[in-house]
Image (cartoon, rainbow, N blue to C red):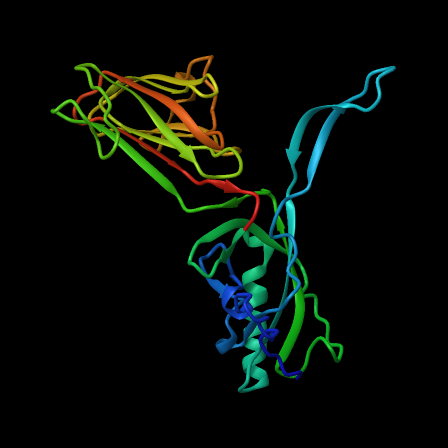
Length: 311
């Protein structure tokens, strides 16, 4: 088995601060659909993420373009980010026995089985910030027993993951607004409250590099819900009587768009024709939230995950 050691650090030039690479490198892990996590950056327990990872930053883009007779070049009509592929060179071993190594290898293969569904790759930086991306195994563990790739108790390979979405996700951001008998909104935003409706203009700062699609949770009572992104001019209007304690969830995320009452009743037909499952734009978004028929028991909660172009 070759001896694997952490990357060496070149001597620091006098007067020029240079971070130690071992301390600054992120850690990478894969969590399978059942919740089992494999940490690829775990030297003490026999896992090393080798230099040469690829695909951790921007995705490839596809352009829809038009050409016109007699005019040089072309006009770009649409830009779409494609899915991405992430390659992770890893080494893993077991010091005690061949049987222990084979058990580790087989457990990893079982965890990576793409037929079980999408798992999650997580990259955690030295400061503790983490971003995730949905991924499934593509190739890399077919079985290479050549002298420089494997031994009795070790293996070196490049694991390749397919990522249907091009975006890395940050931590969930949740904000809740509620009416109170003192005619205020809590916990942060000072919105005016009338006797029959929650009406307010709020500002949301999306820290991501791209759009983010919120999940709205409205706790009754209410008779109509209007959520407007003033920044884009888009509206989302649902008309339905919601009793005290009932919950409406409007999920605007791509490929998951739903509107339900108490987790079971489909409210899609209660959405207005003008409604769109609008997204938060990168940066500042001005929103207007209106809930008619509300009382001090009414709650409006928004949850979203910022989407980033890099880990």
